[in-house]
Length: 299
Image 1 (cartoon, helix red, strand yellow):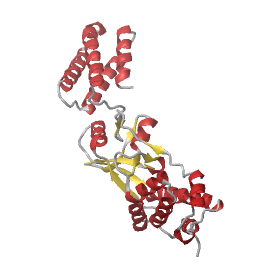
Image 2 (image 1 turned 120 degrees about the vertical axis):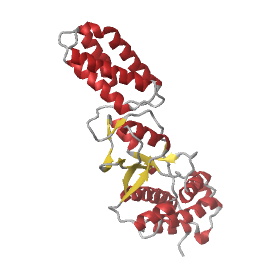
Image 3 (image 1 turned 90 degrees about the horizontal axis):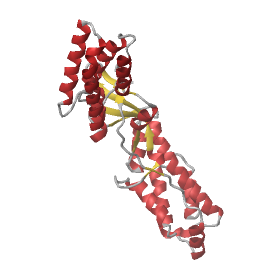
């Protein structure tokens, strides 16, 4: 009868055996070898992680974010920068390995799983698209398979290392010599990855080129631009139509800033309308300065 470690090597090498079953044997081995750090990791994998735990980087899944448009259905979210896209296109998962095993068995490898956004992430998406909506991150089942494969490989590497050093666990037991060898062996390295929520900006898949959030810094920048434009507007020699246009948009901006939750779409359109007027003012140093200030708000 092969030793416990050899059994783990054989099971981990067989893709037909669930990773959750391999984990249980590995937990027994790590407990009897007094490998506390390794056993704690194995138990988190089989029981699932809590919100306070550090999550290994291999549990960071990549997908594509979508939002619900009441007229066009699910639409992809478009981002202003690669950093923003990376943040909203990944998700740490806390589920146990047995749950992931079950999901992979249930769905084909080319299936897509939708993970809904919630809390602050959903609030920021709603502010970005300009209206309350639902959003989700579509992830391929192959992303779950990557997690299972990572755990399987880590256990296999650990067990092979012990087997090569003569730690076998015959009869499900380990000698004192085997325990000493195991303690001095290289324990599976788990790289932790903690995600953080940043004040990212994003936009929906439309012609809107920028979105602003309801932060004090945004309000201050817009208020500063309004004051700058108001004090210099008479020097721009605008036509009657353009003057009316600018005044209307200034009133719109002031009204939005006075609300608790300014609408980023309305603000963005008002700023773009003002920019169009200013771009038509040729040979004006004042207009150029205003456009420079405006570029901070709508690049």
